[in-house]
Length: 172
Image (cartoon, rainbow, N blue to C red; front, side, top):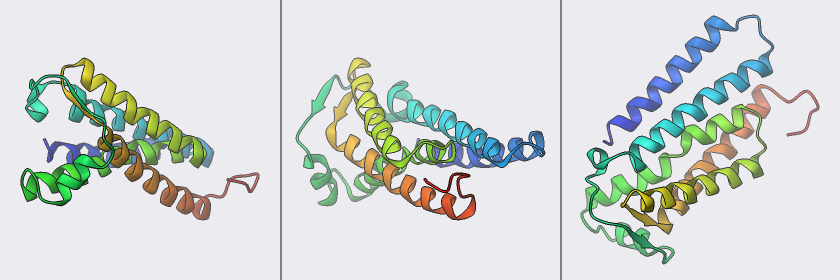
């Protein structure tokens, strides 16, 4: 599963860029940014669905519905190397990276940073609720890691975008 996510991210970047460059050469730059952003969001949502909600084939689900609502409990376990160092690192880094395509897409589409943050946190909560409805486990720390990773990347991309393509009004 963990090889699947980076592969989808790579495919998202290359196909989105190629399609935008080929099909919209004469379109206004802001239109290209928005289309690229939409591509990132759609592909990011597919990645999130595949990695979290879809079936037991991705994460060995089927262990019953359970919600872990104590903030930082799972993160502390992972940082101490439980259940194993490799599994802990994959879960930590995977949760931080999972919302990156959606975060990039929202920024490229022109969504302001504060709304990106709100959307990413709401998406994280929604994913955990859906996991519970799909008889999987939900964890408040997943929301924290997903949100922090996405918000950090959104802030960086927002800063880069404002340098590369400042908005017409000059405010971002």
